[in-house]
Length: 191
Image (cartoon, rainbow, N blue to C red; front, side, top):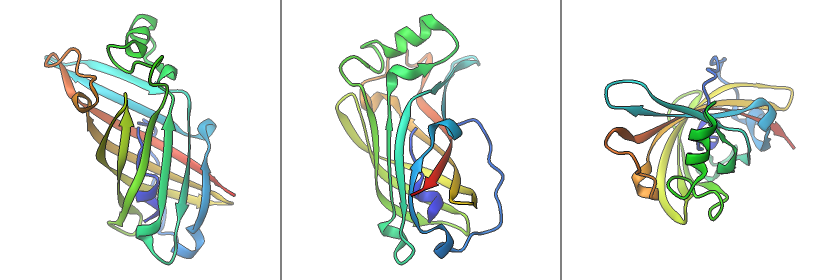
């Protein structure tokens, strides 16, 4: 349940989070604010013949609310600022920010709002929600795995795949894959 909640996101973090023993729902229940300093949103796009593009977003914010009485009423809200995209190559970063991809000047936010959380295991969940990018909104699903709960801090590993063509970001296909793979580590602080 808790894992589903932190599900987006969206958007991708490369840091693997070890799965800890199952946490009692009553212990995890509550509201959390995502801590960007302790989280990461990473993505990758494959390329025909091998290789591809790897990157991350440096700026994002969000919240998680875990409902102990009804898992389905739990919520995840995540906002990513695409101008913060980074690949380690300034020319590619500028291209990704341009109107050919994120159009960060006219669409300064990518948002994910959960609509459904379904527990799939003791520490895992499927989070379904609405992803909005470049003024287009579509349903997306992410898998979340609870990595731990300690001293008011909760950690999830969230993964998912998004078709970039749905959002008008299909430049370079079919040489570059239409599928964006997200791998996120999201840490929330209670309060």
